[in-house]
Amino acid sequence: MAKTKTRYVCSTCGAISVKYQGKCFECGNWGTLVEEVVVEEKGNGKSRTAFASSGAALAVPKRLKDLHALKEDRLSTGIGEFDRVLGGGLMQASVILIGGEPGVGKSTLMLQIAPKMLAQTILYISAEESVHQIKNRAERMGVASDNLLLLAETELEAILDTFATAKPDIVVIDSIQTIYSTLYESSPGSVTQVRECTSRIMQTAKKFGITAFVIGHITKEGSIAGPKALEHIVDTVLQFEGDSNYRYRILRALKNRFGSTNEIGVFEMAEEGLAEVANPSELFLAERSYGVSGSCVASSVEGSRPILVEVQALVSKTNYAAPQRVSSGFDGRRLSLLLAVLDKRLGLPMWSQDVFLNIAGGLRLTEPAVDLAVAVSIASSLRDIPADSSTAAIGEIGLAGELRAVPHLERRVMEAKKLGFERVVVPRYGKESKQLEKNFGIDVKPCATLNAALNVFLG
Figure 1: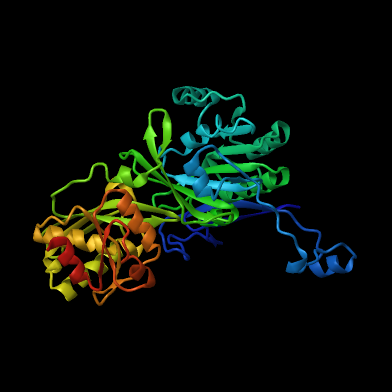
Figure 2 (figure 1 turned 120 degrees about the horizontal axis):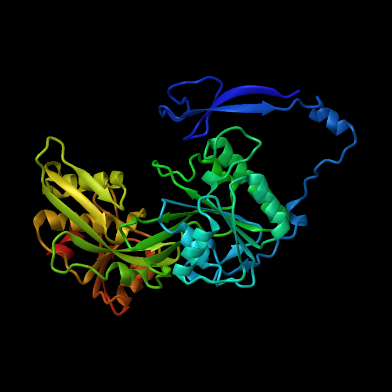
């Protein structure tokens, strides 16, 4: 006979508690425990030892050298930036989770692949909109394809039955938070429903050889579909970055079993949908200001692609006991570290200044090679001296004020040359910096310290 019991699951981290608590014991958040009713079926009482001794077939491990690697047959989506992030195209029977804020362009991207993959049958399952609403949106985008099937359904069991009857090549689930299974009594969007529905979709997709896209909204903390456990189920995790106030969207891979996680795709939101950006550097520098203090161009590398971006800083005297540190698109803790180096090693009075930092275009930069551009823009704004607009900055800053070597230096320098820069400041140390002293058609200035680099930019 089935046994019913109650448990409490944290909606943030997925931790399970047998009794209600105001504070989650795992992640420490308050008011996140949600009550769930679990029905347990009584087992047949057989242990694994009894199963093994019964003569049933067991899984037999195989030696690595005896196995043959499977050939990776990738399928192009027809969108170059999308294929770049996926690692070269779609892998058959893979499950891809696409996350992002509402309205960032997840559903738009899924509709746009339909007319570019006419040889594949695409089943678009919407649990948020009716099929007529999707039809209206497709007409606005100019999408008209005979290979696109639409279904408005929220029950998981009915969706899985459609997999077997329609036999699609690609399935889009929009979105996983609104799908529910009748096997669980919790409401749609709960930790149990999201995790179990995704797991069953993955099992069915692998069984029928279907490539599945699962769309998930992010929480206010920035996690995709709530618990991190969901990211371990799927093969690939993609996340859309970008504010709805900006035209640009960045598609970044957070996890990819079939490719690199460093690649990004750049799109521009237009009336007809998402348009690919073939040259992101030119796009991000299109509205650059010249002859204004607090601006410097950094050469960053995202995956295999070098990108030039403008780093803007505004430094003003603080009116508070503790100065403000506001950063957009750059790690706030890294900013504090660079301010400490400017104060200690160069004697700049950062302790009495409010610092506001922005990466133009809404791009988020994480690599340390942007440190020099950040420091130059801050020093330029503090002294109110415009930095040399024809010079790009490359380099990581150490705690002693030295410039440290960064990878892919030649690739960064050549991107600056292509965009018309006359000079680039690089770290003096490292094998690549010595090779760059040759004639590349651009003046390369190797500097050993931050102070020497500032003298190049600010004189």
